[in-house]
Length: 347
Image (cartoon, rainbow, N blue to C red):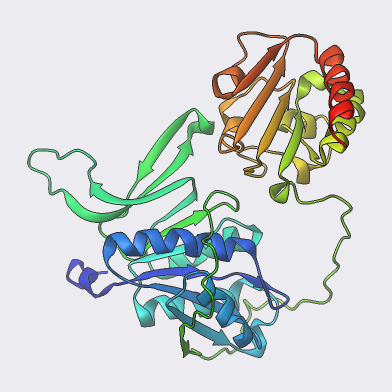
């Protein structure tokens, strides 16, 4: 891409993920962030909706902040497949030239984002936790041009032990993937309408088009912990048998049980209730961290909780640095006592 062409790229675009003609929550979260970024750049927000017979979803995207919706609607796009979706999104980027392209770090987005960025010859910063507009380099370096209005993409690096801020100053679009639960959607705007642009680059199946023989949906009994207002979360210190005790506490409070990575690695609990960098990012009103030491990878997934209550026998555990309330002691005594006390007051 030649340097001269960068000014042609305008606007903040969001890949509006839908599955079975239902928009995924991440689409609304990314629109919320895109609105902030677009305000700083004095530009507008465009949702890119890819699928088959999905035009009915445009009003929902408008309600959550999209000024425009580009709809790529084709029978070949009914179910997510890498090649046709990559062709669709890369074609939209080449045609409409966004300055910024945001994609959710879902199973679909992690497959789609890197392929699209390679095809349009730009960089991609994965798993971002903070996105803002600013100068790059962050601090001016003598003899080096400092560029303004760049997308500064922040993500954990080196296994979460440090935080890196990354920019893509010389190519467009600036692309980032963001995990679900990190950005916040706006309150829907009543009666909002977006300008709808229909665009179809044409789809000719080739040897890269996989054929889907069958889609089997597993029925999961668990509730999505990302929606829970109260989470009772257990770590290695709880042990395999301690989760029944946590469930009792959660039931009294009308909450859900979640866990740390060590618990999943030991096979004590399923991965879909794991909180942290390799699990889910949660923002409940109250988060109980029980027997969780508080490694930076875990904290990254729950530090936005309104109130954090930590119970741990190790008074030096890093979890106490982020906790609003901390109890040092034996969780096997504290949790049942707390449950009993709460039963008396929670009716």
